[in-house]
Image (cartoon, rainbow, N blue to C red; front, side):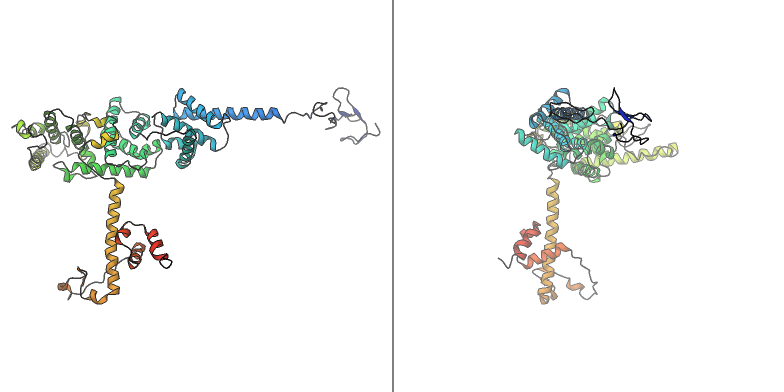
Length: 527
């Protein structure tokens, strides 16, 4: 006892081992000494073990536990994603099998694994022609569209699969049924909006508005438009948030849709008065006209077309469309123009030509406006200006304008859509924009040639004529001319440089300035 170490409390050498626990206890103060029971492990792995320190806690057992935990967490993540995406049990099982096949049942952990699961879910749904927007999957897994797209490409290459084309019509059907903005709309209204939206989307396909574009902003634009037609108040910001797309892109597609409908409305007698601002008011007539045009080729006889034309003009001249009066009905007075001789208005012998001319329709419409103005003035005098003309367009009174008889209200193949006639044959917006830019470049080339000629040949320019182009009018030469400040930008300087290096104007009009500068300017000495 005298040779033992001192007590940690009283510093006396009175330590004795306890008979039960084996810990050292001080007989003077009774304090149990800490960390005094370590026993050396002798005899290898299979030998005796210590009291508190044991072997075997790091080895094959922990590796097995790690793998099982990894698989458990991965399967839990897959089930959570499938529930949030709304996939059924069979589709969820297919996603699990695809993940297990690609990873050899090893699954995985880390930031890449949720992206991988989202890519597998997208591939499974796309393979079965069931639409699952990639933007929705990217928002769920927490990555951008491009990262998810690269992962989808790797999955498709690994399983050697060719995905079918994206179906924008099915995406629209899925969106109108799943968007919370239309959750409170009646079922019959949603069904009518569905037909109208499919009709408009396939018209946009024919007009090449969807070519090379992201499809979901187009879906959002059509949803907003059909919502306005059916008095369902939605905001484009809410639709963009629900469809996980940019608001500014949705606004652009919505503007392009309105511009196309305005172009179609030019064929109507009052089409010159239709603009982007009032196209929503005229949309029932425009869509009815488009529907009639698309069904004309499918009629067995021309009698149905005759009825549709009379109904279209009758709807256009009815008082319920823009005005509301209680004491006067304009519908009867407007229909008298067609009650004279209905068979003479439309000729069944020559179905491609209407005997009623656009000038006659314009005259009828003008007379109708005069009658409505007279009735409005009379009513204002009688009731003391209590009833005023409506400033807003009442679409609720004309809910019967949609017939839904056109095949464009149903999903068609691309070839069938292009063969339909909807009153307008438009080129892609990118082509129209390219033509506009090309025209601006041609003007810049002409201006650059004049500037070059003005500097290189001042004598010719002073005479007022240069290659047949009159620079100023001789009769106005006596007057003091104001100096015009001509603003030139970097593009004008590049065009001048290319012209001085004898580059063809056709090549400059294409706008590939970097290539032309590299070929004709910077490498000119080497060449």
